[in-house]
Image (cartoon, rainbow, N blue to C red; front, top):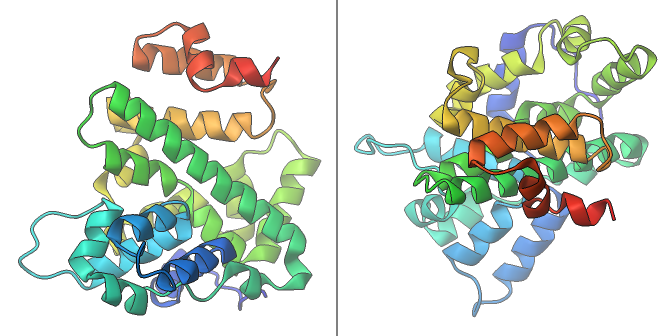
Amino acid sequence: MQFKTKNKLSEWVSFLTRTEIPVLRQTARNITLLEQDDKHLNARSLAHVVKNDPLMTAKLLRYLQQHKHRCQEHDVVEVEQMIMMLGLEATLNKVSAKPVVEDILGRDHMNTLVYLLRTTHRAHVASSYAFDWAVRLHDLHFEEIRITALLHDISEILMWCFAPDDMLKIKNMQKQDKTIRSATAQESVFGFSLNQLQYELAVKWKLPQLLMTVMDSNCSNQQRVRNVNYAVNLARHSANGWDDAALPDDYDDIAKLLHLQPTEVMTIVGADKQRE
């Protein structure tokens, strides 16, 4: 489905703030299975399902921020904690695993679904890298780093859901002209870049502060920002195949972050086995 065209950034922010965020069909299935299994249904098991889906994570975080108590001084970014704050039953009722992405797009947009699933998978991979590196660096904010990497491209994922035809236009523009920048193509179609949309949503939904910091070029040297950006880069480039030309630079960047050699980085991310 293609929603009515919105010409302004503010219109998209308003729409995405009030509309129900869809979730992946697999997420909906897994949550249904948990609901049918009283023995294994708890905050931890539900959090494990939620964290595999950037859409469901954003949905939960947005709901919590919209309904947080006045006495809550600090933002909660750990998914299990969010569920415990809301209560297990309230989470399942108020942050339901509906609608389903695949139903929203329908059979007419199967090619769009492929792009969307690739992007969500890439986000999950990036979050795993970021979490692992944060632990290696003894960063106590490892969950915030994981969630930030998971939601790094949430605006792109949302637009695949709600503006599939326009997103395909952007993809085709980039295929026809490989020199065109993503932001340029996005601005020509939407009138704004997805980074601009991402920032506005992060502010409006009160997403993790680190997510806004990552988008601030003045903060690019901060360790946590580098962690997230390098994880996102590695996930994006390796998705093209482990022979992608950008990967050697990624290994160098990650090596400096973790105080390792590039060959050691290749080992811990599994690149050496992939290339055998």
